[in-house]
Image 1 (cartoon, rainbow, N blue to C red):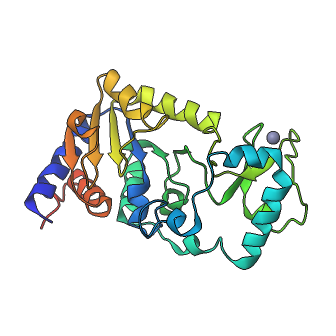
Image 2: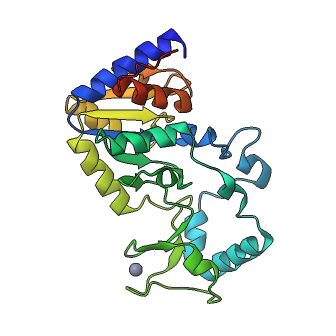
Length: 260
Ligand SMILES: [Zn+2]
């Protein structure tokens, strides 16, 4: 590890030690290191398959049966399986370790890939849903996707409230589920430190999380390969892959000092 990263990881560890309640806001940067394809850019999924329209959710509401038929066809063709080979990287594991150490209280993620949970994180909010789950759009009850993948019912509904069921993943034009926003903002209000990883946090509701922490006098730690609008407001910035920076912070906290 280079001296600069070790030094910054030690500084981050000092801030975490001093903090009473730490949360993390995570974006696509952490998933990219696990080989999850990005949506935009030359190799992006949408560049190859076409970006879904901004009215994707409205089209679902207008004809949910059509969405389910397309979904079943995609499942049958194997189109959904490609991401499921992704595994958590050292950054996901470090976040789970921080939770086990009693340092990290809550992870707020914009990713839908379930890799935090696979790494062992238990306290988590998902702004954009989880691609391994289904959700009732009326009461927000969630189920494992597998329960629906084998159903032949053309249009499953919620056994609790009769509402429409769709993928938990938030579509274009669909609001972020209220329960995820409420929990995340409550966690942010309690926090005196937020570790912002792999996100520029420009879009609501993610944008609100670091701002709440700053507004109440809390501190930000940024882990990102590139500068973001938050960088100037951070107590410490680690310009390194999350898979290097996060384990370095854990090592510094454990007193190993991130030897190189
Ligand atoms: Zn329901």
